[in-house]
Length: 321
Image (cartoon, rainbow, N blue to C red; front, side, top):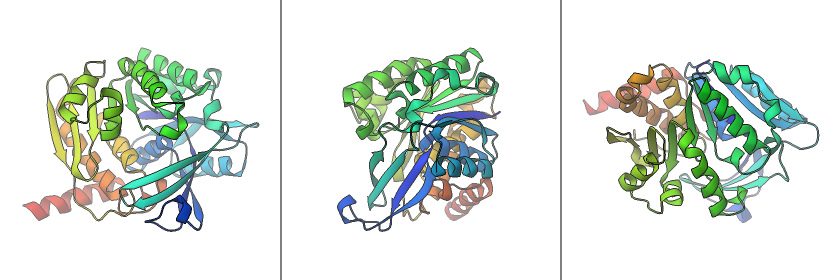
């Protein structure tokens, strides 16, 4: 198994119109989503062997999401169904192609109710990498389940990947989010943040300064995604900026998940000793996957294939040669 993702699998309710705030949207259209699930699908489309661990409601949406993952060749043996809570819905408004607004419909949602005893330990310990986000840290028992999975994966020698993916509405306060996220950082090998999350955790949006602070807290690799500009990386021995590939963006939903899925697909094919040397090329590939996702609407429906990603890279190289 190349990598396993753990966290939320949910229904994204996309607005019928873009360029509007919630109060102006006339209808919402359901599409499969959830950041860790998106990462698993992104990896599968790019040729990786992936699995998803999480919990959905024992309802129509839960069954639909399970079927979507299976159709995308994502292993679902770690998916659990909850009889007492419904599948989470994420209502989305898109005031611009670069900015989304979210309202989460759950009280609680099934994804929050994943318990440690429901984890598939064998699946976790077989993976080269375990990827998580911060949403599963925002409540119990999913927080304990996440920490248990990280402990097992680390003990088995897996790379621990952590996308902060901060959603303010799902935390009691920014201080609570900062505390839970910071507590996990020493247990991760790779952490990905955007500029807003960098400032949340370090009190600065200066990429070089903030990434150095995060690196000092334990991760081996810090990645800062910079939207249409590209991405920045820092390790103990190197740092650098990888420019984006220009595209006409219509929807930023899922771009970060495509980026992470592509990055993990590349890094899990390398020996640990080669991670740093492989990182710039892996980030360029990840930038391309994220850029392609921005050209289509939706999260899972927009994720690119391996051939599409290679084609974009080749077209860009031809244009600048």
